[in-house]
Image 1 (cartoon, rainbow, N blue to C red):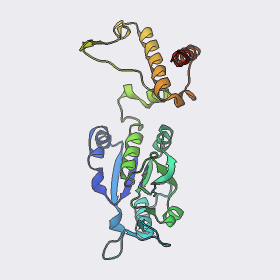
Image 2 (cartoon, helix red, strand yellow):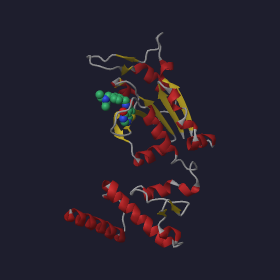
Image 3 (cartoon, rainbow, N blue to C red):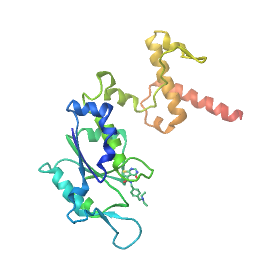
Image 4 (tube, rainbow, N blue to C red):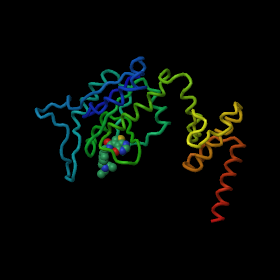
Length: 250
Ligand code: 9D3
């Protein structure tokens, strides 16, 4: 997959994209990342990228010309690639959106700054708008990095065989069960016996129950859409019953 990123701050991207899994994905030729400085597409002698909004009010607005010229140059003859504006007004990024984006051969990401971009950028070149959540960032750069990270790990061959996206799709409906490794006891805290029992079926059952318990406690909203077996529904009913008892008792 090829990802082009248009930004006023290309330096922000060294670090996250040049370490660990994203680094390896690029070395393996599975991901090719290209950073473009929007300032390189200005045509005035001060290399202006923003100006005051028509109609007045605070803040600055990114100029239409450098952005449209940058997209057209980077896109070249390839008209099919999604051009995604990172903006607080976009649809919210979820694992589902990550899968959707991972299906493309190429993505073009535009990182907004200041109060936003001239509306005509949307009219002329943007095909999709994404936000990474309801909190205020200083610009689209960190959002672009989040998207690159989440999408890259879905590219076949990027993760080891054991950690496939397959595994995620089963797990995503629920939060994860608790994990343990050596030693068996640390400062009096023991690893649950079942995990040391060698009984794979009992381990699987315990993990599934703990995942349901955790989801019930922390993210009950996820249980509305989780794919649970009959037995798991019973367990959930037990949790709800125990909770009702506690509430009644207090
Ligand atoms: C006063 C209205 N503000 C919107 C909440 C203006 C504004 C604040 C921050 C406009 C842009 C920004 C910069 N943020 C992004 O460009 C951004 C973002 C974000 O702030 N949160 C979550 N996802 C994203 S994607 C791009």
